[in-house]
Length: 92
Image (cartoon, rainbow, N blue to C red; front, side, top):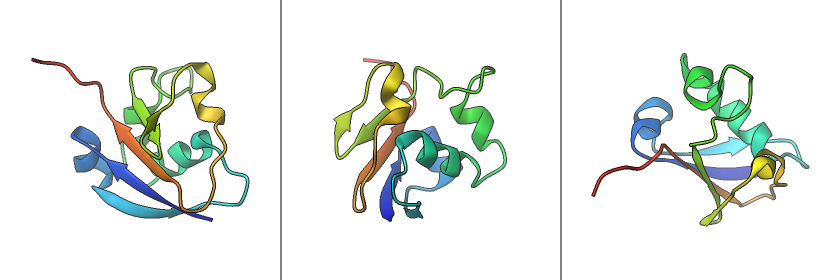
């Protein structure tokens, strides 16, 4: 299956703004994030903490809906889905 990835702010600079990602059928958000991290040097450090889990402050959206909770890496994906990655947002 193919999903569209959109990366914003710092992640845009690191991974590229928009790109297509090919994944096996039955893949999850965790599988997609792992493949995104492997695209560039420093990608894993940017997205994962020392325990090997996705950093909790990273915002993940699937089809413009924010995923929350510990199960956000387990969300099933379908072909045509859009995954967005955003670093934490601060300011006023």
